Image 1: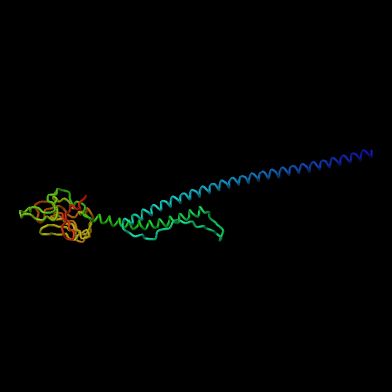
Image 2: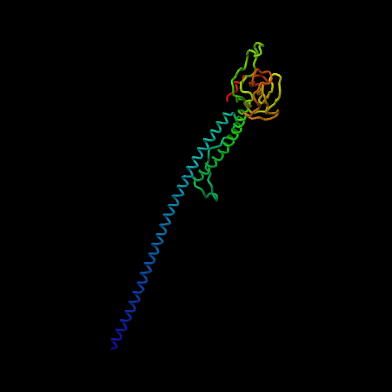
Length: 287
């Protein structure tokens, strides 16, 4: 019996040891599996981040490429604008307002000496944009001058007596003619436009009224100074609508057709004078 008890105790101890070994082995296996699973998850996470990083890098490269392409297009447009403005200035016989601008240059940017912060492509794009800014400033100067010149030209065009003062039939032209009063040939310093009595008479161009009153020969008379020693006369009016010193615009009514003064019937005597000398109004009449 003692031998049996001793054998039982040994088998129980062996079973306990086996159980402990199995438990430790199982725990070791699960720990290993867990570590491998954790490692696999970390590997997948790193792979995901790597793919996302590559995609972000691709997007940044695409954006940089589009920025550089846009800068290149802007440079070409600015260069064309600058050339056209320079050509316009030469046509208008104007000098350049500034020194010719140099070609765009790349400038490296860094936070610390020797530590580049910006890529060459980005630096080139910024250099291009700075050059474009300078080109546009120069072009704006030229266009500002040209705008002023065009405005002045528009004012000059408006002042020129190119508008017919009244619509009607020209019964007597500029130059030598037979006197309607039987006095032989005489110099007619303007044109006579036959029109209904009372029809409005308009200014041929903008200017200042320097005379508005009666004259023995011209009757009721308006004289407009258009600047540059250029004047227009409107004679034989039945009424006067303006006063001396008044500024009038092209087409503004000055008076009405009449037969005042030395006239044979209702008409407008229209005269253009340069340096106080009569010239043919047909040289100016367009509209």
